[in-house]
Each structure stands twice: as C-alpha cells, then as structure tokens.
Length: 155
Image (cartoon, helix red, strand yellow):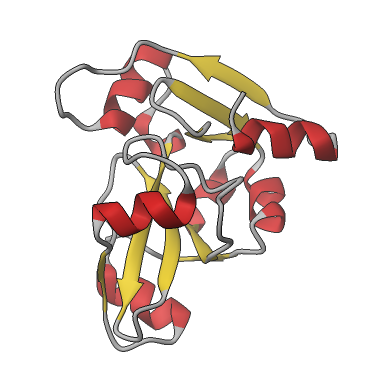
C-alpha cells in the first residue's frame, strides 16, 4: 500500500486501484499504463514536478498524450519561468521515484495544477505511487484533495 492509497482509504474517498506490468526499459510510463489498461491516453494523467524561477517545486498533472507547456505552468502559478525539476530533488521531496510520482500522499505538499482536459471525464487515472499502479478517481475529487486548480497546461 502506498501513501497515496492510504490517504484515500483513510479519508473514505471513492477510487479504484489498477495494476499493470510496468515497462522494464526506460520508456513513457504513462503511455505504457494507457496501453496495458486499455484506457485512452487522454484519460491517463502523469504527475510532473517542475521548479520555478523562485526555486519552488510545483506539481503539474497532465494527460500522458501531451507535453507540459512550461510557460502555461509558470503563468498559472504566477512565476516567470518553469523547468523540469532535478530527479533527486523530486524523489526526496515527494517520497516517490520517477515514473511512480503520485499527486497524492507526497512527503511535502506542493502547489498543484491539473490540466483542464481532466474535467471532460467522470474519472481519470493518476499514478498510485509506484510504477505499475494507477488510481482511478474523479478529477474534481483529486483537485480538492491536492488543493489544486484547473488550468490549461498543454498545447
């Protein structure tokens, strides 16, 4: 059980957990999850950690079928610039390894934003806190849990 799933269960939040065989090679974990679970890639979301020009780390939750637009993220957060955070800092701050970072249950709560495309679905899939584990949850529920906001993050 991961911290993400523990948090959902402690709060009694409706969700479903889906397992799959994670790719052994360094690949796109989200696309791999989408294919193995038989879920459209637009409905599977990756959790990316970016660093702002202020050195603050922030969470961006975007569909695996798209790329995060850094200028949109920076604008949404009120920063001038954003870039992908260093792997070691991400893992130390969140408590998760890359490819398994969940927006839920992180060691340090970070400001979070979710791409507006999530609102088109009743449920979306996000990492369950380790490679090969996805949580299916309502996008509004996720947004409330991470105290996030919806904004356009992809092109």
